[in-house]
Image: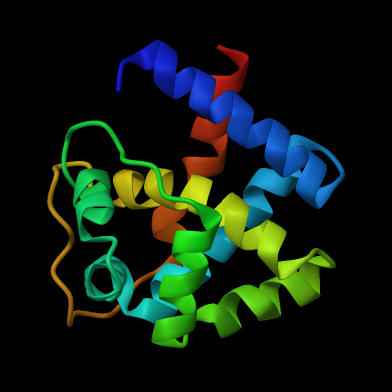
Length: 153
């Protein structure tokens, strides 16, 4: 994906976040990145999430997020089905309750930010090895700022 396409995608993502989560875009972006991080953590890290999504028909998409090429988009419905089948939908339900938003809207926004999160966590085109200490939410530090910087660029 060329830089202008990434910038455009980030801009539409951020406008959606703002309307979904209310408040300023920075707070909405941080909240959504945090939910994406919780989802990755509950799945067992990037490798666990990749495996889960592959098992439920999203293998090509998740491999594009890990690889160095363009990130393939997925729909909120596709992500929701994969999360329900794997039991990870409880992460979204819990987060939606805390944020006071509809779970279906939240999963739709997660479908947009998750490719960025996985891409951010796999800068060399390789998923980090699993089995170590697990996933640390601080690994997503800077993603919200990167998305916000892309919007203002």
